[in-house]
Image (cartoon, rainbow, N blue to C red; front, top):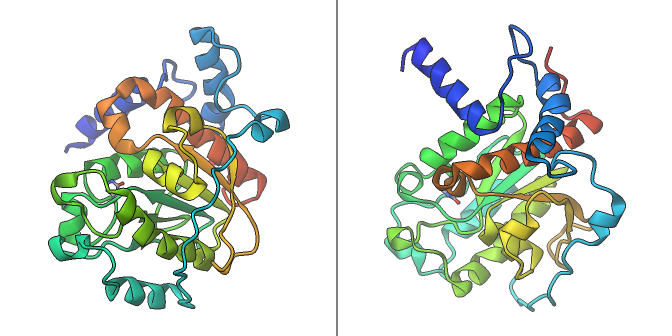
Length: 276
Ligand code: URA
């Protein structure tokens, strides 16, 4: 793509998020962060925007987790590499037999943000890396606008490590088989913040039946299961899956508000510097 076409594509994408004003020659994150949510809410006449501080009352009104299913299996891998080997040799999920490759993780294991999606698609299966297809490109684009990237401050994985045939949704049994590994994965990475991409990741890790439309945009605690090796909850933000945003451009505004909430927290903890 030429520079001009790329700029136009970026502009189109930002308009999709509700941007309707150029604030300076070089738009800065602080301008987006401070102006956009209010503008969006005011224009939509909707009261408080998604990206404002969440009052404690809202956090405490977060969905109560369902009773935890008891799983006897716990991974005790003591490094990310060891966990990868354990998953590679795991024979308890039939998807490994139809997939081309294991898709384990990508990004910086020391990142403050860990993102978890659903399951690999065709491109991911071919390359053995998560989120490298079109939805991954959208995700990269969203992250780049706020100074986040897999090379620096984001680590990314999926609930399911192998592509379900024909990209069907993973079954409950497949999710249950893979979940102890993901829980151990989180314990080993120990991110400051977890971002759950879409309903499957959110329902599986938060042990709730609530849909992503209700869950998204609200900080909740990810409570690690006993025996996962993590002894504290992690602030967790469910957001729409990028594949959903590709199908439903109108939802991009909400997704943008959600990303700004993440940015706000990262700035508060000095994990993300203001862009000048
Ligand atoms: N969708 C996902 O949930 N994960 C991927 O890795 C790719 C697409």
